[in-house]
Image (cartoon, rainbow over all chains, first blue to last red; front, side):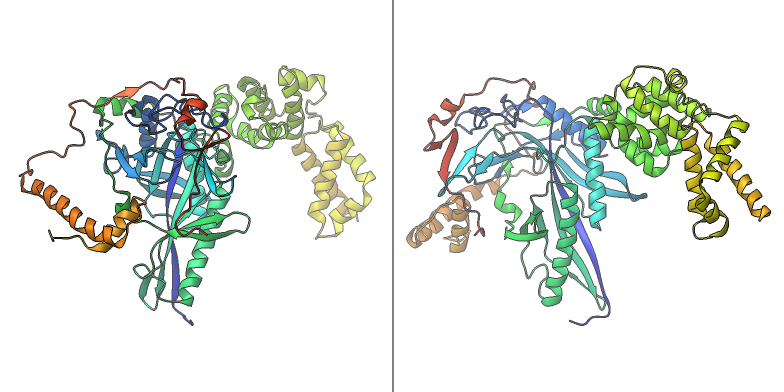
Length: 495
Length: 101
């Protein structure tokens, strides 16, 4: 279909299920224990036996409240519980306890950044519900059911359809994971299914001034940020192609559908037509009484919230002068952000300490497959390393070598610098001798630096590297830079 | 309220409850369900304009339990009433999702 005036806008809303970090299930005292043998963590309540009664887990409720506050939501003074009809054996009551018209939290928002650009996505609601068990299809002709997971507390968070690109969805999901981890309400480990994403995707297609909306696809089975991005990208292309092939592919004509994401093939696949909301036949659960929250309790919980990643990010950039990119990395984990804060509080100059976090400490942690907080280097010693680097006692390269030793030995960095001979040499005469040696040993590089404009810069860099090497890492790079320029300038005027 | 419910509604409700009905049963339930709905319709005659919606009949709210583990049933007891079991799992007829192949 030839069309010159075609613009397509992707519209994405997300449903996110977050497993709350409780010891027990939402409505009974069975342990939440993903590795337990099948059907060992079950009781009459989560098996749906007649006469059993659910009772709300206080911690799950508190965690939902904290998350609602962190997502800037209005908190319901009164919430209730509803039954959502659900006819599959992995939830044996034949309904799921959920919250329908009075969710614990609604009308919030999340502020975050997409490649450095601020974005705000509205949160429609967040409500508590219980997870289903697991269906296994190992034996032909029948389904096997493990109900250990049935009744695990979940917080379902629903965004408004404010997300316009796959990158934005990716950034939002990452930020939401950070928020629940900062709050400590969920481990949010996606491999373990503790955070699951279901994007609702459709397109607004504008063709010659007329708007067409494609049917909504709800994409299931997404368990990585990458899958969220790829599935949204794939789905918007698929829907555009479907509409181009058949202009009747619009909402109203074609029903909404559920699609599954196949990570290996990189495609979404049709699963089933979406049951309309009223088919769930929600009604108030007579087994559970409503929960009322006093304003004072809500205010107290709001005051108890820890600092959230967005605030850390802003503060690290504005107060400590970190690059936005570096700040983003440091705030990724709350423990890292807190350690960095402690280093600054111990007198570490923030900009140098920030660079050392990125280029030294996080890399060392990464090499050792541990968190930076597990390196065994406490904030005070990190601060002292940043201080002696700032003072020019050691240069950046030496600081890195020192850091490696600091991981192994509980010593002060100044002491180690002396012992290892890494104290920077400010002596002009000694530095000049190193510069001369490097120049006489690297004729080709000198020729390039003087006469080959294409290679001049790289050649000068190479010479600087040689000098650092000759000095055993002790030369002051700044002084080396000055002296080598002088020397080259001198050679240039000699020829 | 008509004398009978239309048949497609009866079939839809039956499908949601995973019931398979014969044509005779559909006709029979169309009439019976309409009667039930007419009976319930009497509630609409009560003036409720000034009554707050009620989610629960008990005068109590906010009942919680602490997040403390209570011992579970044990797998043998858990499976003892099951129509079928296979290696610690409940065994049920194959679950076929609508639209699945």
